[in-house]
Image (cartoon, rainbow, N blue to C red):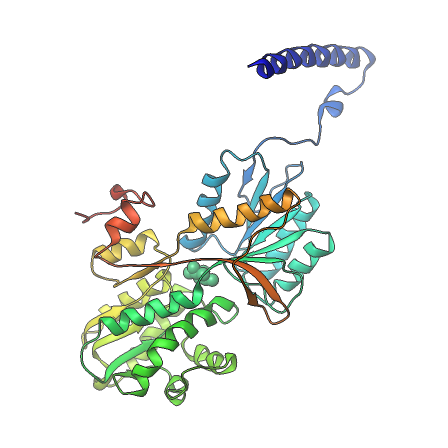
Length: 394
Ligand code: BGC
């Protein structure tokens, strides 16, 4: 109470003083505005424009890969929610699927005085240059969700358990398959994203024994067929499979690939099929494409991210499952780490990831499988989404 009164008094005295100063400046022909244009910015700031030109110091810069996928727009919103009452200034910029934009974004944020950079790279290797630019200026770099690879310039990594994402997808297919010789269509993310390898590695760890024993028949990758007896694949081997079945995280490329595969597939690879789709955006496209093939009688298809559109697909029976990665937790971990660093302390970590150049200390969160059976309890009852955002929920 006392402090508030003192503060009010101080404010009134300051305003009077400023008023007198402005009066003096006007009298002498000086420019009062210049002297008032202080660079001390104590307000919360969450910008999301690509070309922000406002001035003032920013504590934490956040760079996300693209606004074109709902997954990352979701992250932006969760950052904004988490920062609403923060005393720290932050700015969020999107790289729009371009490593050149990404580097420019990081340079902009460096020029605005950031101490910590939270960055989810468009391309893990290429982002090494942006991380190095930040490190050169003493900025601490936190890789967010996607690892920055083959550089020493990344200090921390905040992530979900991506291997577990792929394993959950693979296990879901196994648990919902009947019989033997079931056609299995494999799809993967972009090879420039380290996560695409982790997801595939996790899925392969559970699918491979079923491929090897003939329960499943790979329908669309000769490379995967050739490696059917190998429980663990090298990065190079996975790269060869990804080369055949990548979607590049692009729903349109997923449609094109699915069409090509369905056109090439004989009757023995149609009927009841299984589809490993790496995320929700590509899952919806692939599901729509398979649904239009009259020789496909039913399909089980995976996803990831719990995007709203996919939750509706799951309710409608058009997508089988998704892997829910609670972005609120990831944002909390990343900002918690940033604030610890700003306070001059060392953040807690739970393990580490080898980025090809060093072991990056990491903080990892768990993931949850969602399908029709638990969509209400996991996503609605928990407050993640509103029931009114969907139709057909009972
Ligand atoms: C993320 C996924 C996302 C994908 C495409 C991955 O690195 O972990 O959540 O769906 O990129 O943007």
